[in-house]
Image (cartoon, rainbow, N blue to C red; front, top):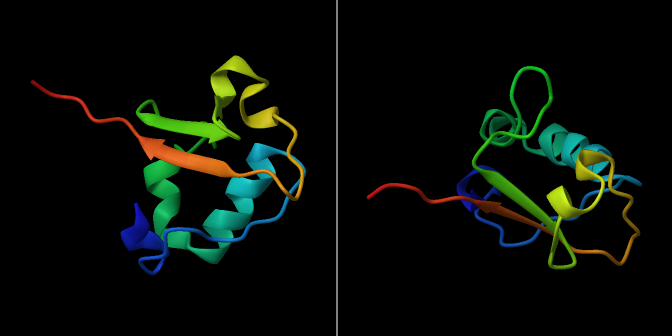
Amino acid sequence: MKYYVDDLLEVQVTGSTVSQAITDLTTQYPTIRTHIVDNQGKLRRYVNLFVNQENINNLDGLDTSIEESDKIILMPSISGG
């Protein structure tokens, strides 16, 4: 995914929830949007997001609250045989 963010390993985003952070990310780097969320703004099936190493699916999903010091990790799943 780093291809879509100018080959950066880390980017700075703002927001008080994961959803707001994704909106900020996709505003800064519009070409990554279709790889993260669908047309309804829902997280794509094979995209995993973690806040400080905790999967957001075990928290409040995209409504998970975040603070300035939190790290959000975007990890696409790999599937196949």
